[in-house]
Image 1 (spheres, rainbow over the protein chains, first blue to last red):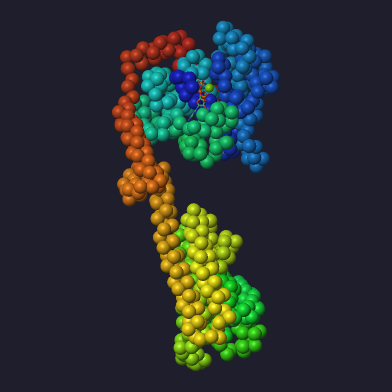
Image 2 (image 1 turned 180 degrees about the vertical axis):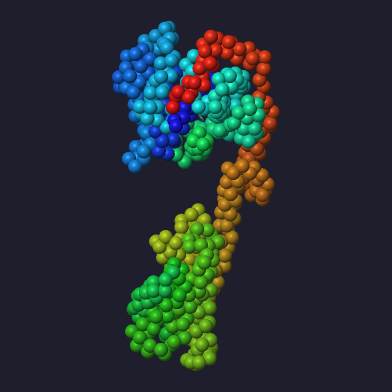
Length: 251
Length: 342
Ligand SMILES: Nc1ncnc2c1ncn2[C@@H]1O[C@H](COP(=O)(O)OP(=O)(O)OP(=O)(O)O)[C@@H](O)[C@H]1O
Ligand SMILES: [Mg+2]
């Protein structure tokens, strides 16, 4: 049975795209078939991490949503460090970066039901073990839909007062939609923070499990989304932490 | 280590040692009919140190038999000296055996040089003892000058100078700040002492047949040289360690800081120094103190970290989303949607 993981944060720049890409890569490296769909149509970004040039992609998610192509045509294989022995595969469904396409979505919108059907078909046709949904920050319609169809809602937050209130709203909305599993992931945590104290506080405040505490990593900043962290720095302590998060997602 | 390799290296280098012994027998030391100047004594010592004490023993023992045989002294006549040469390889090897394989500190170097000199002394003493007990070739006190002393001097000095020189290319003597300094000082000492001794030897060389007093003078010069060498060396050890020990301590302190231990009180005696190292140590202590203060400040911030959420605002914001038609429809369909997905 495929698992849909919606990755969300109330505010922008918390590390949704980076975390999604890394977790998806780790699952693919473990031999799973994994898809990532970039529903951040207004400000797409995750393709950058995979060095996928959207100009080389004839079809993006936008084209599918406007009935110009099939969803399967929008999936591009981006499996990291192809190990021929491994059965793992990673597919990315990018959003268009053409300003016209973006403006059109913002202006006219689209039928969000198509998004749901697209996800269904991707899972069936590729086929997939895991489908990650990278979202636009905030709670717009496609984000709400992704939460409604997800088996797991992974909310990313920084230990920052700007994030606390919005996360509470997201958690509440997730409860309304009865998401089967809601998890919190702390990102960009300064090294001086006590991990245990932070985990306890956050878990206690929101009444959710905390699946990981990712320190703020200088290397992540310098990598500057030009590659996948766990591929570039497999032995870094952040990569180790991401691996334990992966195991919790698999559980 | 396997016995085969020990025996093979021992006997192989023993053959080399024996041939060199025979070759060097032409360079007899002044007024010592049996003792030649033999730099090759460093061989059994080096093999003992780098391979195995037993291998070192075999080089000296087998080599001396071969050397005596080739020189026409008879294979077994001086068997006590075969054993003594073996011991010269065995003892320094024994000192290093089980210890670190590499010489990288002044301490290691001191132990090495001392073991070489002491092994020479102990081995010669052992040979003399066996002679007195069983062979009785020696006549005292004349043998002391003509045999015992020259044997000790040539072996101790050659070993002292050449063992480190041979260990360098073997990769057993690492060039660190410590060894570089002590090597430099040792080289200066050796050159100073040996050139004096050499000059004296040279000047009395032609007079060797003259009254015994001259010969005695020569050996007194030799003994004084060795004593100077050893005393100078011990002083140099102390001198170098005064520089290098604090560096080790500073490094360990920096490592401690790296591991989050900021208590550098144990650096007190280094900080008390008036030199550059003292200054470095004070800076390091100050730095650790600053880092500790900053970290404590940050930690106390974490302790105060309270996640404050305004419940009324949250309810308002949630309501704004939940009460939309879109959300209500979505909520109705949510369960069914999820089941349809996979
Ligand atoms: N653990 C981390 N340590 C340091 N930098 C990080 C970490 N995680 C993410 N970043 C950096 O933060 C920036 C934003 O990351 P990312 O694009 O993944 O966030 P996002 O939530 O997807 O943003 P958006 O809301 O704009 O889509 C990137 O420059 C990334 O390199
Ligand atoms: Mg993003």
